[in-house]
Length: 206
Image (cartoon, rainbow, N blue to C red; front, top):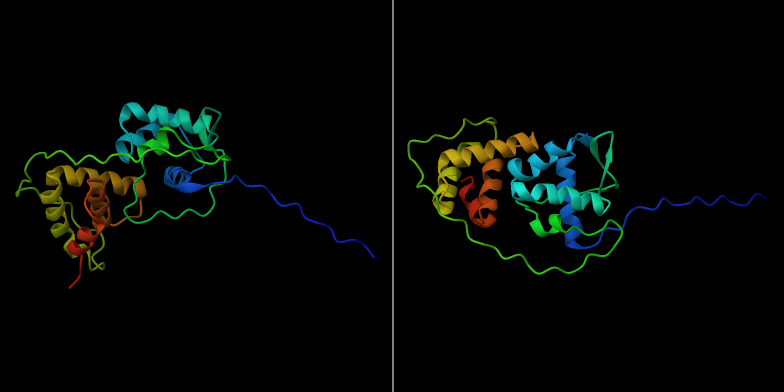
């Protein structure tokens, strides 16, 4: 009688802790629908499109991800160097810049880092009542009719003008592709430090 053949399991990288989760979620978003990206494009997305880090820090983030084994360079473009697995990105999630500037390795346990101090957003120009948000794309979404109310709420709470809110929401739509306007504005509000509960109340469908 022949002995059963034992199949050798493939070894995957070990991801541990919230620090690695931040990196995995960032890379999942950056490489959604693509297998490679030019380094300048990735740096621009990190800083200008997603506003996760400052422009002068984007280059440091890419270098750190390469050094820690998350990314690799092939034929002049950046590729994923590990299998990210099934990654869920929670609503309103935003990575800590320290987790990107000093990422954990792909096979090592993360080292503890001090909690990032949250600084309140600086008040900017008073919202202009003459500004009008972009038209809604999905009229069958009940929250689409409440987008204007959400914009006014975020403008009052954050101090950003409606024009600036619209500009940032358009960045989110370009970055995530399939995203409704109200969700894009909600993400902008979350980045400004607004509580998701307050944003949800502004979008409540009565």
